[in-house]
Image (cartoon, rainbow, N blue to C red; front, side):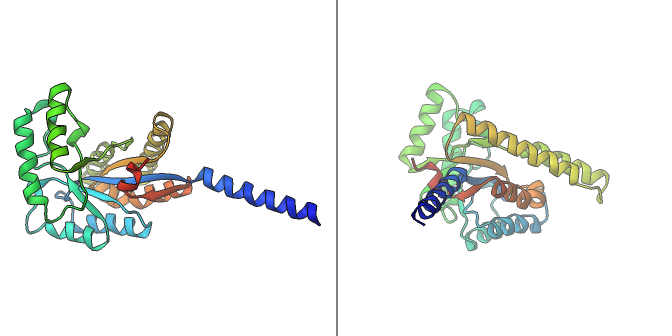
Amino acid sequence: MKKNLHYSIALFFLFIGICCAQQRDIAITIDDLPIVDAPYNAIERIVHSLVKHKVPAIGFIIGNRVNENTIKQFKLFQQNGLELGNHTYSHLNLKHTSCEKYIDDLIKADVILTPFMSNPKYFRYPYLSEGKLWRKSVVRHYLNENHYIVAPVTVDSRDFEFDAELKQLKKQNPTASLTELKKRYLEYVWQRTLTAEKQTPGKQVLLIHANLLNSYFLDDVLHMFEEHGYHFISLDEALKK
């Protein structure tokens, strides 16, 4: 009897250990809000998928896209407990922009986006371009002085390539099957995730975009992560050591 009890306890702790080992964490970050080249229900489908899978995601807004029509997309995010951050005003590439012009663009975005941004304030570099040497240092100094936290990326989905393919497919045939495209997109995201796990073990940060592609397939992407034992966390949690 005692032997069986010890065996049961051992199995219990082994099971707990396996479950803990299999659970992996990932934050979902969404660039290029608001969507301007797809129907409003595209952002509704994206938000629905995030809520369905209980994902505490964050979206990054391009300031020059803010107007009376697009503001409702930000409100939809906020109403569903999702965070919003700064993605510059003009979506500039720091690699090809002077520090002065880039910082002016950041200031312009900050003024416009302040009513929508979460606290703490998060910033995502367009094109993931942080610049080099002194240019990188000057912009980082501005961000630090203005209490911005830079949002890193460990898994870049490069979904814009699949999104362009989707739009071309829809243009050629509005009723075309998307099964093969979805399969390739999911496989690509998963392979990028496996690569990230090897290069940067621990909590992962996925970059996707607010686009037509993810209005169709985000639910599948999130389900895929769940099937592989992932737990969705906020960006704030992902940055904690």
